[in-house]
Amino acid sequence: MQALPVSWLPAVHSRNERAKLPATLAVLLALLSAPSACGAGKSGAAAEPRGARAVPVLPATVVRRDVPVYLEGIGSVVAYKTVTVRSQVDGRLMQVLFREGQAVRKGEVLAQIDPRPFQVQLHQAEGALARDRAQLENANLMVKRDRELVGKKLIAQQQLDSDQAVAGQTEGTVRMDQAAIESARLNLDYARITSPVDGVTGVRLVDPGNVVHAADAGGMVVVTQLDPVAVLFNLPQDELPHISDQMAHGKLGVEVYGRDGATALGKGELELIDNQINQATATLRLKAVLPNPERHLWPNQFVKARLLLSTHKGALVVPASTLQRGPDGTFVYVIGPDQTVTVRPVEAVSPTGDLAIIDKGVSEGEIVVADGQNQLRPGSKVSVRESGKEGGGRGGGSGGKPGSRGRGEKP
Image 1 (tube, rainbow, N blue to C red):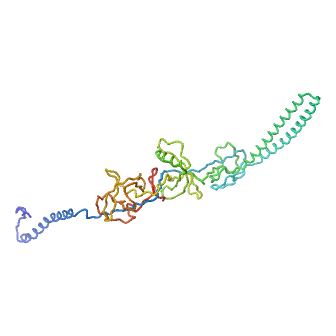
Image 2: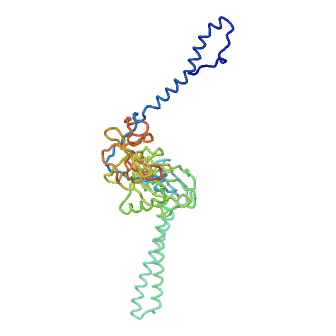
Image 3: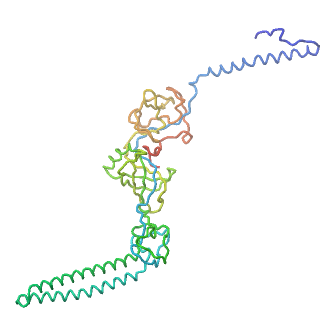
């Protein structure tokens, strides 16, 4: 320690001040020695070898299993059929036989229009038919007599031809009467308004007592078919070749979930791919049809649809978080028996979901690092974290981002 200059020391003017001088010098010496002690502590910590510290990591086991490949998209539910029930005849609405929101079957009577005017038309047509049939029978008898008389040269051929024309006209009148009867019966049938499909009724639009017309635009009620139900969803247009190839081999399954992506709402099949691509969004629209007996799906409901594109049989699978990318390509950290890690180059198949399929580089049963790679170097010591903590766990997951490929088990 260097000696302090004499000029730095305080001047001593009295006996009391000379008594305090040793204590003051002791305090100054303590203050001067403190920085050197701190420096010594830092250098000692820096000298501690870094490789001695075990890095906590989350492990995952390389497993072999079947991996389904999904395409996910956002969509909405639409009724499989939507029918606006209208009157097909004019008349006064006498009865409404359904409740709003009621489940109805095809052919079930929903309303009744006053049938009496159509019954009158039917009776008139039946009376005209009876009259014209009698005239037809008489005309046919006249033609029969004329033929006998013409054969005996008693009347001219012209009389026979005239009577045959009258008989033909009367036969045409009879057929018109039959058509009038059918029309009257059809109007009577239209007076009983029935449901055209199995479905659920909406809000009643016309009350009993009103006069309804066939030309009314609003209709009487809207019936929507909810079982089965349809789901429309969008996928990127780049997936069109893959979907078309798989559809050529059979029906593709579709799973529908709630907006949270976790609540399963139903399963069905892909019905069709729309016949044009939306140029504004570069997406194609698809339609799936699903059974809906419990009414979990409702028209205009937003959902997430997962299209099962294919299944990789017996694939080597690791969590996608294990994959790391470097200058030489994709690699993983493999944990050895001595709890040290080594770098292993791998070939992965589109690891865009929670799971990644490995084609080459690792073997079934090996342990790889799923989380904590940012602190690792080749040969680093590791300590295994417990599964379930932040960062993942053993095994994998499912799905992917909406509108993208995903791989994994079904939730």
